[in-house]
Length: 261
Image (cartoon, rainbow, N blue to C red; front, side, top):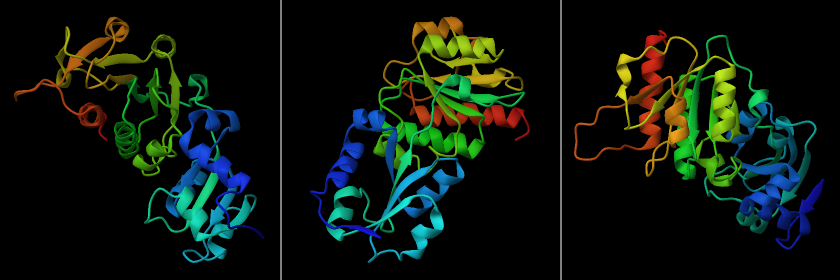
């Protein structure tokens, strides 16, 4: 079995680039996953592992061999592991996985889909929280409009706690996504302050896309103009906004309630 003990090894340097640079992830079509549970969830979600690296002091060789019969197995030193790992609590295992297509036309939707659309979310923690909520509600898909960073950013991988791999995800421009939703005859409900009606008065039992924007600026005019209906969550405090993942969860679970969960 191959062993790597130096952080100066060219392959290890390339993995550091995968962690740090979106360009490297895009060019190689790969990204890093950290932790046994996350690797298992990714594989269950159809992600292919190219390489599995493990630290023998923390995990036995049999565990990574069980995970994949096709991935190259590499034993690494503690120094190398600490160079690559973000978390101290992971079990001494990382994997190089192949990225998936994030094209809208690759989505496989049910006859009566419930979709979350987030326009230009900036914070990896918010994206991770949105993906966790989507997984909990078993949504058909999550679509990111005008993404600010690639979804295989290690901060998003971590904050989603594996839900990056359990959801169907696509990205596109606002214009592309609106066209896609209308072509699929999916109603568009946009969470916005302008020209809105209370969210709980609307019917989400037919094909539905719930659209949320950034906490700072909200949704662009293009979304508001394209909406079947603009909706609002009533605010009774001093401020007029809440965390985007909380707002999305309120809307999603009202739709799920109407659909009988």
